Amino acid sequence: MSDPVLPKIESRLTALVAEHRLPGASVGIVRDQELAWSRGFGFADIASERPADAHTLYRVASISKTFTATAIMQLRDEGRLRLDDPLVEHIPEFAKARTRSGSIDDVTLRRLLSHRSGLITEGPFSYWDTLEFPSMERILAMLDHTEVVIAPDSANKYSNLAFALLGEVVERRSGRPYGEYVRAEILDPLGMESSAFALNDALAPRLATGYDPHPYEDEPAPAGHTHTAGIAAAAGLYTTVHDLSRWIAFQFRTGDEPRGGGRVLGGRSLDEMHRPQYIDDNWTDARCLGWMGMRRGDNVYLGHGGSIHGFLTQILYNMAHRTGVIVLTNEGRNPMPNAAAIDMMDMLIEAATSTPASAPHVKPAPTPAAWKPLLGRYHFWRGGLVQIECRAGALVLAPPTPGAISLHAPAKLEGAGAPHVFRLTEGRGNGELLTFHTSPGGSITGFDIAGFRYSKLIDALNEA
Image (tube, rainbow, N blue to C red; front, top):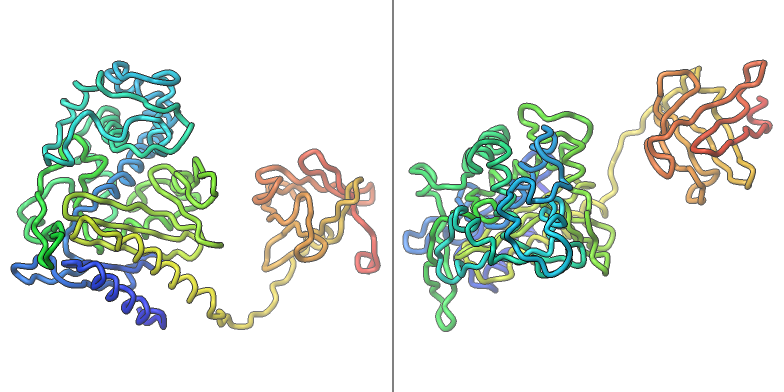
């Protein structure tokens, strides 16, 4: 990657690593379908002076939730569950949980995926202090001590327990252990060979040592490390910058293509995961299906962070620019990953939008003969004006002047199987049919769309 903004990014990252006295960090930039740049800072392990790089293994904690959400969407697409199913339909033991407001049936898979279920943050355990993570059997046995503490949909309430239980849904609906399912249906098809929910002999030597900072000394102390057991679906993934670049690259593969091969989720379902389910009152933060969203001026970033003993991580990406960043650190009590990821995204997009694109001049595309009679200006009875135009080889519905307000324009038109019938793909009429009408002599007189009839205006240009 030879980008003029890269020296600024490296300088900013160097400053942040030094400012927070981090043992090490691994960082990457994704451009569409490739890891365009990566760099390690400092040490994966201080004692051995092993350097950090794009292949260093980190615990990424809550970034795991985006994989769990994808697994749920896969099972939804296979017809094994619905997003608006109550959790209790899939885990009957959840009927034992207490509710302060509403019904147990209000705790749906969709609300769990978007942190709007009202469920408590953790189960009735102290594993963040003791490092003794409960098994799923223990979590299920303690559901009578679990509570929905605020009304579902009344506010955002982040819940690790929610995603632990979603992992159990994946197990029960797929008939496979959660880790095996994610390995077979997501990690392997995407080529994420260095990602796992349990370390093996090949991966263990590549794991960065996680550290906790000392309050009075420069040298940090190694943090404890135990398996996340029953909350693995919420916080258990081990992975690398290299592998996460494949995860971000996959997020850009939206569209109409179905699931298959390296496409672990159909394009429409991927779009659905990115779509906000809830937007905060200030309209700057959103909860999607497994993903978090944030607005920075005109730009929207999707992503997720993770925090676990000795590790803090963040990934962000922007769909419009097909650009993403990865920041993984092996020190668990610093704000650097989120700040670095936002700064990197801001700098990358500012550079992309401030440099004019140098597109070659191309010959104007001719209008197909069958479309020529359709072109022109139309109006409906309240005086609304639109134009049917052919631009860049496509038929479009356009306002009469750029920037003008129009009820149904702008929109694109796609053929719908008959010469004078089209389907709108944007705007107020998205998905609806536009049907042209003709006079007895065969000339175009107007069109109908979504309950509105537009008449064609005759002018000198049309008469010519």
